[in-house]
Amino acid sequence: MPRIHALAAASQKRIKFMNIRVITFDLDNTLWDVEPAILRAEQAQRSWLLQHRPGCIEQYDHDALWEFKKRVWKQYPELAHHVSQMRIRMLFELQKAAGFSTQDSEAGAREAFAAFLQERHKVELYAEALDVLQQLSRRYRLGALTNGNADIYKTDAAEYFDFAFLAEEVGASKPAPDMFHAALAKTGVAPQQMVHVGDNPDHDILGAQQVGLRTVWVNLGGSPWEPAQYQADAEITALRDLPATIASLG
Image (spheres, rainbow, N blue to C red):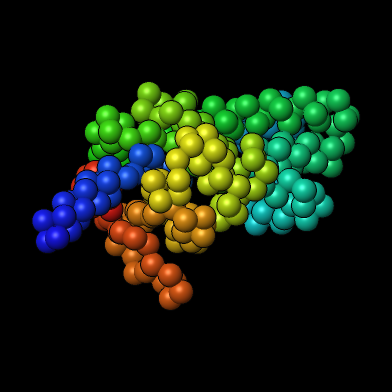
């Protein structure tokens, strides 16, 4: 009997070790610092408007523009999880408010957004990110789950990802379960066979845990963990530690 129990325990340990099959990643502030890209994108958008739609943005300082955006958000709550469509709508409303025709405002909104998005995708991955993704992709399927509008396939990390979901595609932002369910349906694995990696305690950690996924909190700034109600399964303060951390989870 002792030998049987020992063999059973060893078998369970091997099953646990092989259990994780899929890793999903948040993108902004998990694989790269999003702020530089957003600042460049906002400037590109502003430059387009100044050149092609004079009079629609000059009168707004930062605070006034923020208030304008909030009014648009309140007016179109159905776009809350569609960040691209919400930005396009805001750009449309800016131009209409300045007296441009509906047709010109619609065309201008699309073109100004295109200028924004081009810079939005020029992200600089954290120094260790590509090496880590390369290591992990040899053993696991990798997916991207983002509330933003970054397309992982337009970045230097594209080749390592098998799938990606955006909140605006599934109609709900993390911590809602929709993107996590989409990843499970895409891969066909059980929740305990998937690990979600992200920087936001609520959106990434709580959201994933409520669906049954295991979680790794990316805490590159060494911040204290604030939520008292739950904990991530693991925490890393450097991306280079992620492969070993994933392996330790099973």
